[in-house]
Length: 395
View 1 (tube, rainbow, N blue to C red):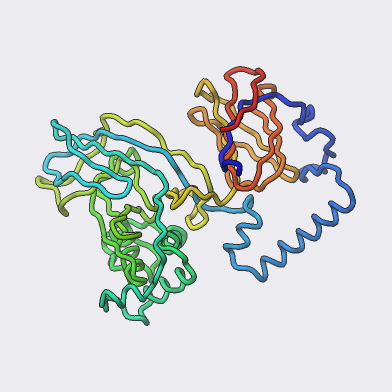
View 2 (tube, one colour):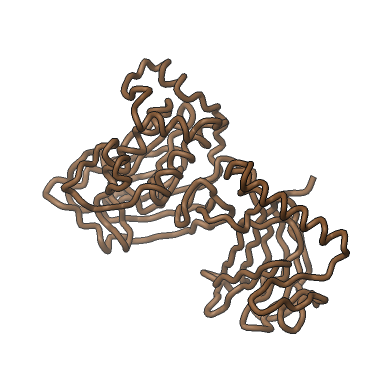
């Protein structure tokens, strides 16, 4: 059986015409799609498929529609990779060594925090048992008629695993709750739900309450965030997806992990006053890379995978010289064209369906490729630093 991942070395192929269209394709009207000539039977089949998709919009749940038309999805991304950061802690910060599934915090001999994050698939296969788990624990924290409980049960209905149930809860929060830094307003979970807004304290409280309402163990985590945008105090959550398998999540940004610039505190307050963490990142190594779609979350959310199983096909272009500059990759299907800029020598196209694609590296003439995606594979293509010919290879 073929591996779900392949790697190729770029090879120029005359599959694109002078204007970047597939050879033999007919030019569409201005602003319209490009359609290659097909037999009448193929056109009839496409029309029937379009009717099926239209009918699906009326008859099928959103999750199944997403599988039919992945290129139309607007969601988050699944990421893989590892990170390591060395952080100078502010004086008086109550920080102790800590570890959970994929996250490790240690203190070196100088008292600096050394944080490592490894985003291998979580590997959780624990079945989701919903309210049955809560009743076995004897918890009466949330009444069955409470709004948080009703919403959480509705969102997680039909979930097969704890990972899937947690993703649905976090995904709903990311799509429906706005960040609003207003310390005069209550940050109680029920109030945040009613307003659909809150800051990190209230959003974490709501996420914990929703998890507990369906029998998933969760707690709030006070901590510090050492980033360039919003450094300082923060609050996120930790959930237990299976016995001994606990993971961090920041509901509006990171699901089932947090990056290596998050540091949990062993207490609620820092001795001596406010935490100043700007310019305290001493070293940062590694990178996290998007490899698949994450339907549960809104755009801008990234998540860690539960397993190596993929949901959609993807194409990743990697420049041998690791640069990119002003270059961008252009992916052309039979009905649409996408473009994305190279970042750190990498350009990714996610949420693709199986089929043939044309790829060009702009400015024109850099590289032209003809590729075929199969199933839900992740195809990586190594692009030479300068135009040239390579030999395809598979791993």
